[in-house]
Structure formats: structure tokens, C-alpha cells
Length: 332
Image (tube, rainbow, N blue to C red):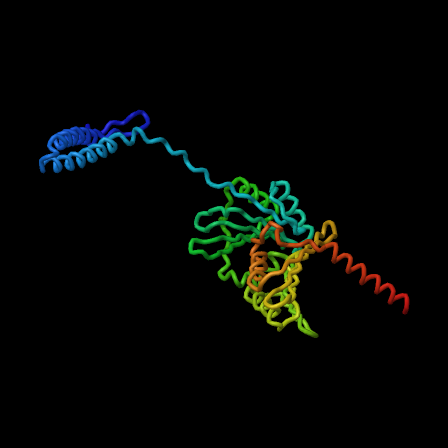
């Protein structure tokens, strides 16, 4: 019998073990003879040969017993995904429960076609035959319309969708939160860019790109990321006076600010509370394009470092304008 197993199924390789022991003893003998004959030429040869056979023997011994002495490796636990919910009012939260999702579904049905919510998954969840699920968006139009965004193996993106009745939508979310989302019967968009241009309003609610000139402005409801980048470059080059990107309950105002520099005003509006917040940040053309595209992709940075809260200054300016208007009204 060449191999023996212990109770854990580990093997003892007998033949390599025996050959290793024999080789190690033989090598030691040659080394002893070589040391004794160092003054003669044959001594050095026997010492080198003996050393080589000892190394060969030690390897044979290890090969014979390595299965018995190696430790069991604990299986690596896959990273736990975190969910970031952007609710129908545009507020973000990492506290995602079935109760909160039920509230979102109810709100969608009460405001048909006007609002949406989405869930970002960090890190993305691998889904067989689809890719890595990174985001889910929902809107109500007769049914709860789900849109799933995937990263595929070649570095590209894929998008699929499905309409579900409210009770089926809740059932799908239960499976999703338990770690086993079901994409059976979901239809893929053949052209994701077409979805962004034509179906984006349905999936994400309000979106608009407005370009301002000296005495004119153009509004674009359907636009690509490339259109936005060209508009930002036009502001920097002096071709346009201002560009405004409206995306759901959020807007970005882009103004020129010195040579190759831009000023961005980030406006957020909470429909539930009725209040707005304003943040400002300067950046190069490349930086501004990066911020805006990241927001459109649902990957906007959560940390607020670098953005200055100017809500108080904006409110003061509005009060000054209102005061001037009241004075002008009294004079008339």
C-alpha cells in the first residue's frame, strides 16, 4: 500500500517518505566521508554530493508527510454588501429594511411617474449569467418598473428591466435582502445609451440639461454624458455663460471661474421638508465632468469634504432681493 489516510482523509505518502529517509541518511554518510577526506580532492566531491542528497531526502520526507502536518484553511467569507438607498425625496441612507422599501413602493404609487427610488450595492453582488449587480432603480407606471444595472466581465455595463405588481415587487425585495435576487424573465436593453437618452426620465424622474448664452437658453430633456461634457467645456471656453444639470431633486449650476477653472453650485431640495441646501466647490474642467458623470451614474461620492455649505449666504441674498422688490412695489 503506497498511501495511508487518517480519519480526516489526509494521506501519508509512504514511497516518497522511505526514499527521503534513505536519501537523507546516505547523504549524511557522504558528507561525513567528505569532511574526513577534505585534504584530498575526492573529499570535496563527496561533501557536495552528500549535501545534495540530504536536500533531496528532506524534500522526500516533507512530500510524504505534508498532508498530515498542514493546517486546514478556513473558507474565506465573501464581503458583506452594503445597500445605499436614495429614497423618493432624494435622501440617502444605509439603513435599508423591508419596511422602508414598502414605504417607498407606497410613495411611488401615490405619485405615479413623478418620483423614483434606487438602491446602490457596495460592493456589487455577482449574479450568474448577468454580471455584478451594482444598482437597482424603481418607478411606478401601472406596475412597479425595476431597472437593474450590472458590471460585466469585459468591463462594460448591462441593463435589464421588469414590471411587477406591488405585491410581487415586495416579494422580489424580500429575496433581494436575503441575498438571492431572482432575475428570471427580466428583459435586457439592447442599447444602454438609448435607455439613458430615451427612458432615463421614466427611470429616474425629472432630468434636464439647460445651456445659457448671453440672451438665450436651450433645454434638453434627452442627453448623453458626452453632451454634458461638451456643455461644461463650452462654459470654460466662454462659449456659454452657464450650464445647469437637473437630476431628480438635485441640480448643479456650473459657472466660469478664472482660467480653466469652474464654480459648481450643488442644490438639493427635500420635498418632504420643503427646504433646500446649497454647496459650492471650485474645480478644473476634468474634475467637474468627473463629479457630474459620477452623480448621473449613481456613484456620487458620499463624503462632503471639499464642498462648502453656502446655504446661509444664499438665503441672505434672497432676503436682500425680496426687500428690494418690496420697496419697488411700494414706490409703484
